[in-house]
Length: 458
Image 1 (tube, one colour):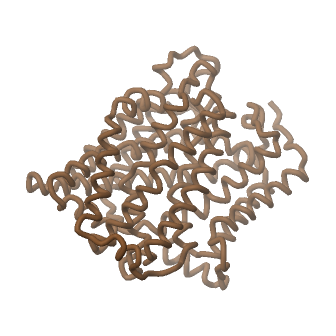
Image 2 (cartoon, rainbow, N blue to C red; image 1 turned 90 degrees about the vertical axis):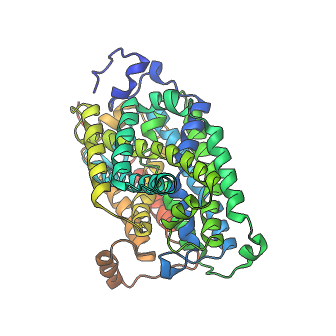
Image 3 (tube, one colour; image 1 turned 60 degrees about the vertical axis):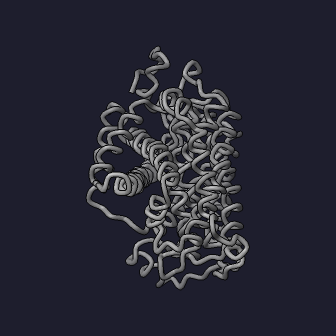
């Protein structure tokens, strides 16, 4: 971490640690933010998640009809992108990484719990991304050269993600995102949209029967978007203004989300795939143009792996502020690549829900505290916060418990344990919105009663 007040040139922003970003390094404009977050939103994993919405339960899906799935996708994209934009705004306001930002509502040591969870999340997503990328690349190389080589692709893209993470957010946008042919990705998505419907009857797909469980579909789609809120300030701290952080993250992520989820759902129905990861194999077998489209998306997928490796390292700096960021990047990348080599995760739906149950109420607590702090966090609010704010931790964990009581999700041993609490689903709202409302209300009441947190002694 650079010393406070160090005069680093813009090219050295990859090494900037947890101190507030100085004005001269706040260089990302609205276009930079839109490109960054649109690029992060364009993901094979999102397309695969769209398939989960319509695959029957016998294939680990929700079995929704296409109209219900589209409605859930649109609603979740609007809500999730709004929350992501607000997270970007708060990050641009405080100019520190998200897990450091959590010191303000939860206390300095209180922030360690969400930090640990976020590190696990970043590692988990990095592993998932490398598996998805390697699956797509293997399907392509099998079609073209008769060689799959999944382990080879995992190692290669693990190295690429490490290199991109060394660039840092500013270098990533300026040297990678701006120079990558975004129009090729757009053309690829348009082609895949046409391919998914070619020879099909769109009206018949639309009218095909399915479940009407809107709220589980909403929770699944929202979990995919909300999983970025613990990372968003890691990037918007370099934004030029609060408005830039809001519009760059919120609007940038929103634009591709609905088409991508919808594309995954349509491909799953029209091509009758047997499981969600099999979607990539089906695309690779769709002809030369499909192969090229999948190639473009596979290459573009490396930015999600970059983001999770980089944010995993930045989150670790909240626990280990004196360790060089590059060493942490290398460590996170090594663990993620090793995990991708030994783990074969074909069903991550419970993982998505479990993460959502933690991070939806966590963001509610942050938002409530920030609003009641006058919609601004000064340096002392973060770095001279109390050791812990138990009332805010209770508000967060209460929201998590409500989420799990309404919709128990996670490993079998966990859902079996929660079942003893006799959970009941509400007829509306799913689990995400009630847990957000509960955590926000509890945190706001606790914040109002405490008036103003007592700053720790210098």
